[in-house]
Length: 406
Image 1: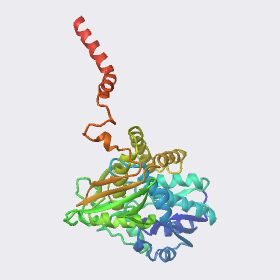
Image 2 (image 1 turned 120 degrees about the horizontal axis):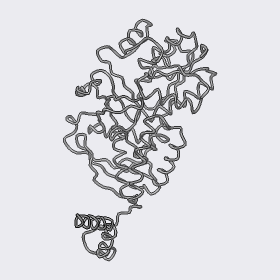
Image 3 (image 1 turned 60 degrees about the vertical axis):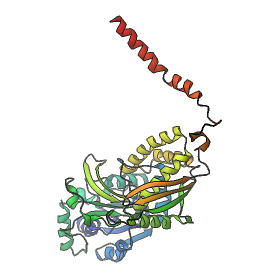
Image 4 (image 1 turned 90 degrees about the vertical axis):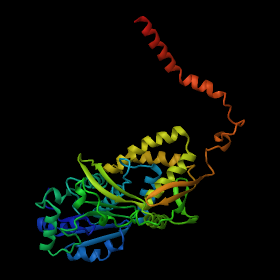
């Protein structure tokens, strides 16, 4: 690759991307365009971000509010799919990367950049997620991944580099956690968490109350859906960003959404991280209860299989692919009847369903009731069982004959 003249950097203002700006300028003598998306990471992270980027050497800075798009076009799709990675992870970091990388590529093409850069390490999943998205939107632009090139080998080295180049950072060698936050979740990695023998320190949790400190009285929340999309909380209709913010607050108060996970990364290694997803955990639980009413058995079970594939695709970075789009079309179609309300009870980190109702419910009280009724003739069960058990009966007969021959 020839030395680039202008590089678009995926910029967050964290430790890695903060030192990448001076590194790019020193290494290539190029201009740096810092691209950041507001996906709900909070005002503290965005405060002074443009000034910081310019002060550390960026020639241009683009910061865009992408919260509404993130919630409606990405997170609501995830809720509708039911996708969960390895039983626990609600994909908060994974699903945000394609949106950020797509916008970075668009800004790069718009501003005449001749290269793209990111701050992902060579061990992580994010490098794959960013670069697969680049290939979908700017396949001709080369990619600079400093963690695969420079001689910095640890976060301690990165902190020293920042001090040397007078780059302001919040990370320290004593409290050295890597975090990623957006409106859906916050992740915590590094430090004491690197060894799975260690319990997660209380200090890492930032969004949710400890279940031990959560209210002693259970709380309830009612979430309304229309055609598979969340539309209301406790009877009040809210636009998507406000709705998720409200559920985050409610869930966090009751210690909802904490997980501690040893996961299998796409690049082949295992890693350990802790995640907080209060509102998302409530939404996924509520939507699952609603679908239990509105989907027939075969569709529900088939969807559960596809949800595993969907979660893996999101985790691995294959968002901008025909298969993901086709799966979303399937989930959208089968979610058409998913209109109704679900009430959940929250107590010290736990969730239990209290009430489920939908005008499209397939649950028939007349059929399900233990009281005998005309809707279901119980004598029909005899033939049903006999036909389903026929292969077992034939096999048993063959075994019996075989024993006699012996």
